[in-house]
Length: 386
Length: 221
Image: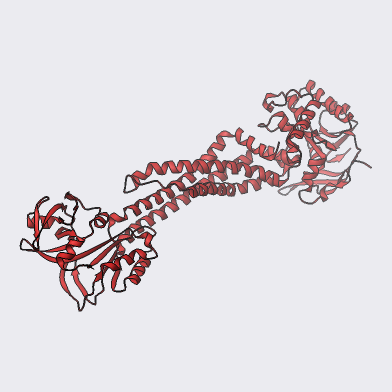
């Protein structure tokens, strides 16, 4: 017979109350685990989907001109001199400190060409990177497989009356249109996409790049730092961050996070109250028992140890069950909460350790006063009959 | 020298503006190995006297010296330690812990003693055998009769070999036959050298004791 035997036997005897206590705390822990796991899984999902949002860093040749366009209407611009990016400089982008956060680097060369007596803007792209970055593109036909294949925007297709499998001639060279883009509502509708090498050659810009789109979106990416790092590597280029895309997504996620934490705090507070009230009730029910303990020589510390040990055992169980229930709930809710139905549930052992530790901490804190109250009971009052 | 010396013991309870004098200057000496019964009507102060003797109720004034120790001069939790080492309690309503078996109830006072579990079990078995319940070690209190529960309570009180056994109306909830057997058990324990101080309102119990102290209105008469 040791003090822990008293605690364990009491828990066994008061199964219903202890189950209520465990469930009260477990719900709080499960809520936190669910919300934290959901938030983290959704962050992960968003990070994975960042490529789909497109580029968020734009690298263009440095110029002293001012663009004169607004909402797709261009009035030209005033440019005094225009330098260009050399292709060999692009490798430096992959050497920045935050290179791990670079998702894709898509260089482009732009130039006007005449096709069937229509002036068209030809864009030379690295199709592999371009298609990775622009996952919203819907292609009728097929992706270009070789340098003699083109991808055309929906407007180009209409105006030039060209469809997948048909050919176009640009500067005397014949190309096959492998695919037509579905309408995007963007400038892409009016462009003709060719392979980078072929476009450079057609435009007489071998080894030159007009602009580079970089996708580096992720919830924890220091975009501003990355812009600075790229600018240091490419001193002749103008590097700008497209902040809105990141900001809006991250702000929404941040709001959800804050809401989650607030919800968790409320649920935990209620859980702690349940522990407090139940433990207090349990102590009051055991007045005589505690009086006997004190009468036979138990110190106040012994009484506290018995009560706190009971709380610790219940809290430990609540923490473990809460973690399991929270992960289960998060797994069930994630497909409905995330933008991607295949979003992955984030399993993190630290959340498990944290939830058990939190349950223990809250359980013990909420039981501290009842334990103190029990230890301070006057044994004579407690026993009355004596 | 007496085992217990009570001198000038006074105890007042305050309830609002009312002051109740439960003990009004009690002087008692009890020798080692004595069996004392304290008798008196309800409100005479006998239960208060027992709780003061048990180190659980600080007197308003006066002294309680037990085994050479001035009980209420002990600092902090030393009084609890004194109870654990020197006193055994038997309560009127048994006050057994319902979720512990008879053996576990008896082992309770040993839960805070540095002893091996095997030694604790042996001590509990020995105490239960002394009270005639060696065959009911694993019974829960609700599986025992009133007399048996009282015997378990006595076994719990003697398991740590206390100097003094304090009993509060131990036969108050028992029928006369069971009451006699319990009193015979107390007599037997006393014959073995156990000092016993028992509060009772039953005059028949007095015949088992060496001496009876009568209290009236908080005073020894």
